[in-house]
Length: 212
Image (cartoon, rainbow, N blue to C red; front, side):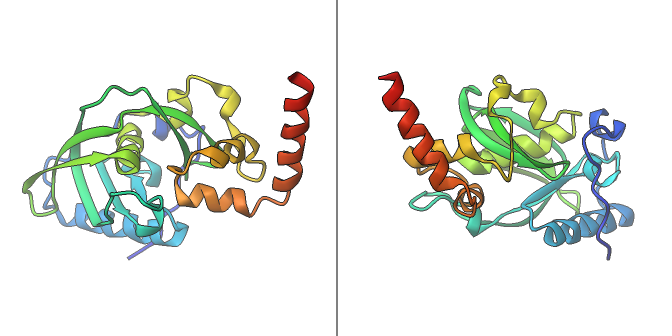
């Protein structure tokens, strides 16, 4: 199939609601789903939504990879899944804050209030209706991708823009990572490869002493 170009923040297609897929079994939908999987594999991501590859179709393709699960978590990996016309239901209120980043907003990450438990109803490529429940980081990924189908980017969900940071300067994330073990391992890896990490920690300790 093909790796598709990813639409970046500022492109109008990311702000438009996706259109319902009338026939999930159509060959062009299967080709789109395969292209989306190829694009995810090329980018090293976990999921992508139709509008991100310049399609107006209401479709999400994802896999919840083992490497995305925090150590000690009860979460299990989820194999490649295609969700057509997904409908999301919040089970918990969206009050928990999670660090997120996005293929359409490269080089940035920030904290977003999300529900830690959700339900999903969607159609498959063979036209069947499926249901699944997701929690923790799995739920965050689902909310992030379904948001794209409604023209919403994670930055539009943020309630505190002071946490919006460049990936090569993850100072606030690094501070969180000192005490919070329930952080996406991919984000932890970003912190661990930050050259300024030790200097940042020393700066914070010095500031704490000055303020005490």
